[in-house]
Every structure is written in structure tokens, then in C-alpha cells.
Length: 410
Figure 1 (spheres, rainbow, N blue to C red):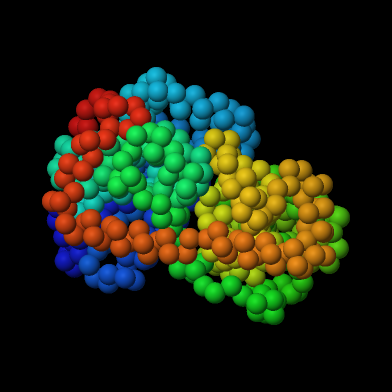
Figure 2: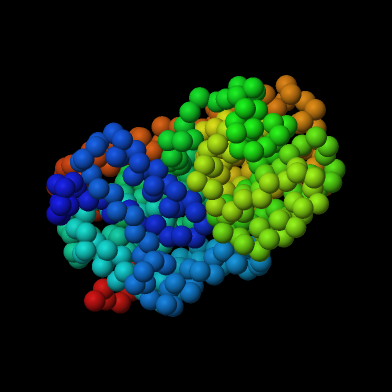
């Protein structure tokens, strides 16, 4: 372990830009660390799956995630479930995912961190191997960024701690044989901008006006970083069937969607606002009367911290299964499977302020606003005493048994 030039302890945060949730969670914890422990730690966010210096084969494979969930979700479902099999997952690690091992090891060797934190399931086992070969005794922690349904890759590596987002994931860890002291239910970390007191109705209207909107009932639609979830058809259904409602669509990196919606906005009489990436997402969620989109865990975590009622329209097969039921059962949202259903739900809630207020209250009750701060505190404690963490994982090898390391690191 080394210190940075400023005397700070480096912490290596491993992510993968499949969607935006992994990076957002890492940035939220980094922000919390800087706020709570100024000058003590230097979190380094690294993408060993798709970043600079990553082999082309791995970058190409990881880059298929976005097009796959948008265009062929059925195929993604087959891959997710297939790789959940013990035998197939062993094969995938030795073949398709083998380039991730040397890239993770290179990051560990370059930064010599006081702790390694995996925010992406495909970095967990490579992190453990890199620790054992390069930095013995350095703790490895997993922060699960899926909300309810988790892939085997999140849980099978012998890490020292697993941060789980919800009670269902905690129960899954228990079924895997993970000792209770090894996993902690804390939540999905979100940035501080989302963690503020909910706005009152007039405050929401004023914020909408400051964003260039009319101040009317606002539906904010989002499909995560990939802009998935059939946003065009759903936005058109609301605009065509629900009067006196404004719609703002945040498209992420989906340029095609943004162009198509731009043409629709020209015919919508000023009721449709189309955006790409935004750096003030908290403002859009806080001023919304409804947040509409697929059941992404990051969106749900951020929206509930803003006490925003949710209407969920779809989910990515596999890792987002269970999210809709989780939100609906808590009273924080509704489910609308089709554009026609969505228009009907929006119209109903627009005309029922009491039901909308109840959803807003339940959404706030589902939130985990302290997750980033709590994770930062845990990392600070662990990283400050790395020697005491060595061997914590020895008694647990996860549902797949002993770790299996494909090939060599160098």
C-alpha cells in the first residue's frame, strides 16, 4: 500500500460502464468520503472492462450491453440466465471474461490501494485474485448496485465484505451460506444532490419554471444511461391522451432517441422537453410530479431519495426483475406495461392529488439517503486498519466454492 502525493490513502473503485449505475454509485461514495474525511482518502474510479488500455475483445463484448438491452432484450435474458449456471459461468470466466483479470491486476499494481471496492459484478473475482498475488492483506469489498435480483457474479467471490442494497438481496446472501457478519444491508449509494428535504408543491412549480418549463404537472421520463424502455412511444402516448401535462425525457447517451423525440417536440406545442445527459438530474427528479421509466436500480434509488412517485414501465431481464414488485408493494409507484396503460395511469394520478401524495410519502419511506455516507464510513474503518482484514474471507468461498482463476495475470 502506498499513499498519494498528498499523503492520502488510495482506494481503488472498480466499475464497468454497462449503464450508468455503477459509475454513479462509485462517484457518490467518493463524494461522501471527501466530505466526511477531507484529505484522508483518494478514491480512484477505474473501468477495467471498457476503459483505456482494455483489450479490444473485452471492450467490444462489454459495449454490446447497451444495444442488446435496447434492441434484443430476449437475447440478453438468455445470456443472463445462462451465465447464472455454475458450469457456464466457470467457462465464461476462463474464456470470454479472462481479459478482465490482467486489467484489474494492472490497476491494483499501479495504485497499491488501501482497499479495493468492486462496484461491478464482473470485477469481484479478478479483484480477489489481484489482491492475493499483488497486495496481500488489502481488503476487497463488493458494493452491489442491483436492487432485488442479483447475478451469481455479485456473490460468489471470496471478498471481505458485501454491501447489499435491500432485504431480498440479504436473504439471497444467507441462502448462499454467507455468514451474517460478512454482508451488510446499507442500500444503493446516491449523490448528495438527491438527499435533500422533499419540495412542497409550490417549490416544485418554482423549480420547474427555473428549468424553463411552464410550471404545470410534470412527468419526467428516463431510461437510464442507455435511454431504453420504449420512451418514444410512451412519451407520445402521454402527449396524445393526457391534457395539461408537460413531459421531459432524459435520453442519456441514446442519440437516436433524442433525434426522434426532437421531431416529436416540434409538434407538441411546447409540452415536450428533450434532453441528453444532464448534470442536474436531482433537480429534474425533485420537481417532477411523476417519474416514468424502466425499473433501473439507480433511478429507483435516486427517485425515492427525492420522494418522487414512480410509474415503472419495463425492466431489463435478469438484474432488474423484482424491482417493479419491490416498488409497487411499498406503495411508492405503479406499473404500466403499455403506452395506453401509462397514459391512463398519468391521467388518473393527475386528477387524484391524494393518491399522488400517498405515493410521494411511500417513495420517501423507501429511500436510503444515508447509504453513501454509511458506505464511506465502513470503507474508512476497513482501509485504516488493513492488517486486521487479512483472511476475513478464508471461511467463505461463495456458492461456487473455491475461486477459479483463468490463465495468468502477466
